Image 1 (spheres, one colour):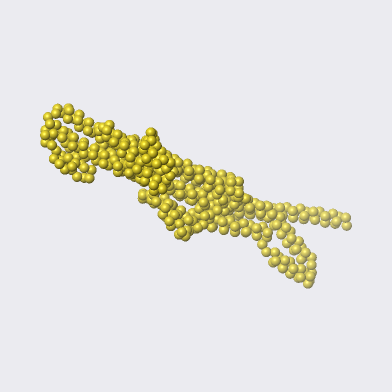
Image 2 (cartoon, helix red, strand yellow):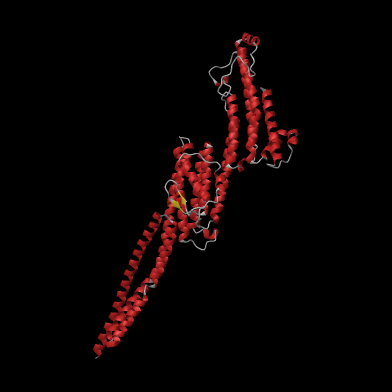
Length: 542
């Protein structure tokens, strides 16, 4: 057993050195020491691990496959020896996989691996041994095989753990490494009679978690930078790769497999013309995005794809995707509702256009969150599924609250504009009334042709006046709001904004005109009272 373990470690070492040398010759990376110096150095294991750690992520899977291929011969020889010992001792198990050659064919107990008959004398001698000694010898053969698999998996685990670039790998690159490790695990665990290679599995699982944590940290940092620089301008046309990202999220929600090479295909077909909005494939909903919302959409797709490839990461993916959504929601509120974008992005003011685009971004993720939840649900443990997915429900509720606040702010802008223009409505209306009454009084005191000419001049003047300054300015404000809202918000949100704005306009204009009539009546009564008192005094003096 010790000799087999030593041979396995030496085999792994030699395969690693050869692979590192081939990669260095091929120019895949720059190695600081030659493979010969690595193999002959005093701390050769440490130097080999450092050399492997220098390998780029794109070629690291080659090392694992080379080690697996190099160990295949050792595994086959160990299986042959164990089977021969069991056969000679008469302790070969029946009805399990040990008498299977691994390709679905039964091996002949009377033949060894080289196709020759087992020595009948040796078989007879072994049969003469006490049953306890035969069992001990058979157990020793099995222990030697297990020692071989333990040493092999430990060496492979150390090689994989030395990959310092694992956290910088793309999902496709790390998936290649995991597939190579899965191939080794299948061979080693079959040789060990189903005994799991816990050390290697733990190493791969730890690297999966480290990779996911590193990618999430990079996503969170990038999202913060993108939001700080966001000017809340519509991205038109939308690059086609982001429409494919949205389609990919919807496909994952339907239970389809993730495409690990989606980024490459997106770049390859990036010259296709895009549309003016993102379109949800299932419902046909259209959303006008900004740059930050497109970046977050791609991050969510990557997290879901990682969970689909590595199901053990699904609970972590739920927390991290919900965290990204909460960060986007809260930071957007600070930048738009709190006017933080005036400081971070240099905006002069927060306009209705900015509010409309922020509303569309919030609506985008209110629609995407259920898709992400559906995509992650199959990979979650049944006992924790309901509690984990409740995070998305809370996030969608927060997004809905934010959307209502943006709606109220948009309507509030028009309330402020109406209040500004309404401040002059009373003066304009009162002036118009008094002017018309003065004109009527002047016409009553005139006679003949002069009365007709004066009346004609007043009618011409009235006809030339047209709409008031209040109506002109307010109509311009409504036209601007219509262009912004109708061109950005969905039909339902646009109708809700206009319904509330027009209802407030009716209420405010009606109240202002009512107050103006009361003011005119009060002033008119005051003037008529003064005139009546003056006439009575003159009559008394006469």
